[in-house]
Length: 255
Image 1 (cartoon, one colour):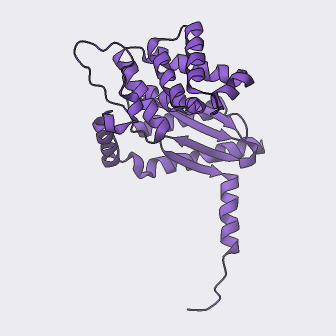
Image 2 (cartoon, rainbow, N blue to C red):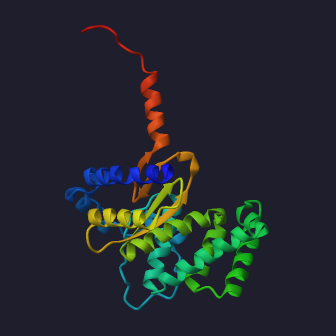
């Protein structure tokens, strides 16, 4: 009972924090949408490795905009793959194939080590990836993308690229993933209330998906991550705040 109370006590705090947070004010949301709408994958946006054509281009070039601005190497690769997959109308298939490769890597220590070993020559990496993609019957988009990654010696980053790509596909479908960390599994009613709270904040047109994580070290309460925001309402966080407060010197002067 005490554990359930600790879990539930975090939900009202989360609701107040989400409602008050400036990220979801109308002006901030409009600015964020504006940035996303201006994000087009120009050659100078990504690594020159991506100037190659992933698939046969249509007669009339289709302009595709990434739904979420991404930064860093993995974000650039994911954005390039997203545009190629949308143009070829194979977005869901490419996402599934990437996740399949990541899961295969997790199940096979040998394959995982190969993916991370930067001492393997580029020719060997490319041949191995070609063989894997052929046996798995991956689409040309996924195969060509992985060949580029292999040539660049970045196979060890494929899992992160796949995560970023999934973020783009979810945004494309109007979905938002919320990761909720608690000490025990979130009861169905609590999960329902959390989804409703997020849905109220985001408005219509967005679908919330909740991914639960268990971490006894937070002691109680909730940690909710979605978008670029983290709401830490765990007992561990509050205990640390109290500890910092107690360590501050006390001023006894009557001024």
